[in-house]
Length: 261
Image (cartoon, rainbow, N blue to C red):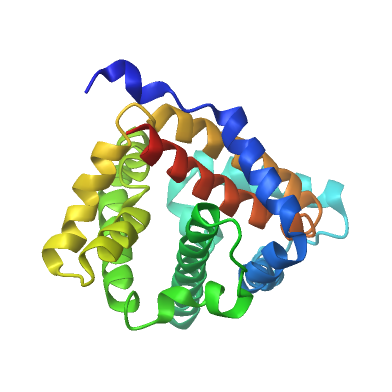
């Protein structure tokens, strides 16, 4: 295969397809994403609570921004001159809180993966109807649940090792293996059953699929990053549109790169 064929995915066309699919069934797309949208609000609430408590433990009141800035500046100064005091100021969470965060994140990712499966099927058959509840919980079926959890754990290990080495290898692994769940879905659809070999083969399949497209996906990731900053400013209200848009864009991106191969 000629390498020139690898970079024929137009990001404006990917975004256009995502917006078009969203407008075609706005209520259906929002309903499909309602669980992760609600979870975003819940996550925001508890994140604010955790950081508010942390600042309170440091004697910082967020009601007076000028005083808070001065105290933070003094703490940073103290930490720079005396690194041994850093442990007094670092945010620490209880084991129970850490476990709850991991479980919450895992559940959130599982739902998003299930939604991506539903959206890819919908893009391949635009005349079909979106079943919001069934579609959002699709990955929790016996067909997908165990292998997807296994893939998530393995992917987390690769990414963590990459970031432990340096930030660039971590990002590289994230981009290279970004399509493992959708590759696994298509492999499972064609074979009818999954095996450890096919699950691990999703990593090599994603790696091959992403040749020539890592930079394009990186650009989408940067775009999402700035959208998420704006979303934080709206206290997650923008998630009603942003989360479905991100899911649709990633599904459209997968469809484009598989078609180009």
